[in-house]
Image 1 (cartoon, rainbow, N blue to C red):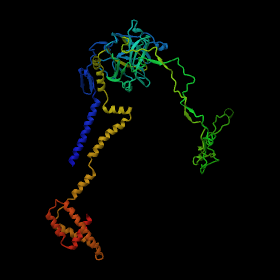
Image 2: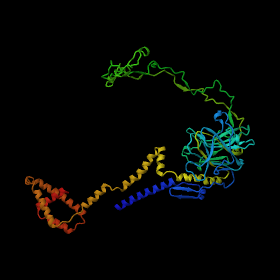
Image 3: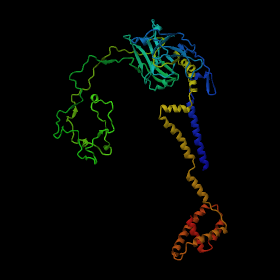
Image 4: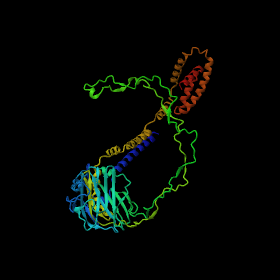
Length: 600
């Protein structure tokens, strides 16, 4: 039996160890794209050494930028001013720098950093070739790191519409763009924009179409101070996907999931239609045939004094609730001509603290059982009810149907036009292409290494669990249950129970011990001496002794049968010798039986 308990304990401990190991592996292991396997990673000691190489596009691209050369080659700073803004902040004079990351830096890697606070920033660059929205998908991808968090500001990009008069030195907020994409935050409103400007096929006017908000919590991407990868994929079948760190957070259709919709409704309400004067929208009306009951008294107050209330004993009717402070003294600089007659401040009457109350006793108020309020006739269904009026529908004169909103205005430049109350916003590894494999490879060579270094520099699992519990206190309950469950199972199955110990001890003491004939005679003689002392009145109790002897013989028989079952290890010869020694005389034999029964 003990062997089975040992195996059970060993199994429980082994299961806990395997579970802990697997959980640790799940926390520490990071899944990277297969393309990052070619990266030369050398783990030595506690640090992670990464050999970084500037990403190179592996297919057709329309624009790429890594900033690793340390110069803003091809980028143009805006020299204009923002319209409808005070002159002191209207100019786009925000500063840009090319710097490595503050934390989790990859040697050799640099990015574009927004450096100024509370200033307008604008910088742009031409694409290698314009993108025409025809049969190829559009993929926009870049990295952002809010190194100091973000209070209020954006990190989105704009794809500027192709035009003959596009001048990047005059890039500002009113410059025509086709797509705006990226993170934006102000206060506690965390956004991820995807906006495209749709051209009305009849009027030629442009209208912004906003994708619906992602149904995920975006806060961590703004607060964890890590580099995140933002990707937008537009497909010729009018579908789109928005991803963060290669995980889709929003997807939909340009025809169905934009606000306002791309295509207007076929019918609209007639603006010239007016509700008729006799239109009755009342679903219920008062019953004009109803009469107020005769016993309805509208003069009854809602509350009355409780007639059953009794003034508590000890109520001090003549004692005021507040008295003048006897310890107060008039200030020395008090001028009665200027300040008036001085009066001591009022304090609660100390005599009222031990009494039920002070001052004039007033009966408490109670709800008036006879109160019914003002009588009103009951409401009935309106026989003339016509429903809620609405204008009639007419064909929409501006209706159109654009079955291919993907065919947007071509783009020829990319730009950052931002305002921020936080500095050190990091941008890196821009790419615009049409092939998903090209974008994934580009991400693996850049963002993949940043993610690998950040993971290696993260604190241990225990610190991460504590940090997570500080943000979500309910996790402490989960931690306690996780630790208490294996400990409780271990105690339940591995701790020896008291019942088993008692059973083992009983079995040990229950085994019969062999005695010689001489030892048995000595025991019988000693028992006779003990019985002779207190039995001075044995003659008077003769009748009781006979009854007792019969009961003892019956109990002795039962005991001997139980002893024969449990004492199988004793030899038959020894048992016979014990019977002969105890059966040598009637008196001693009866006494011995009685004594043995008492012991058992």
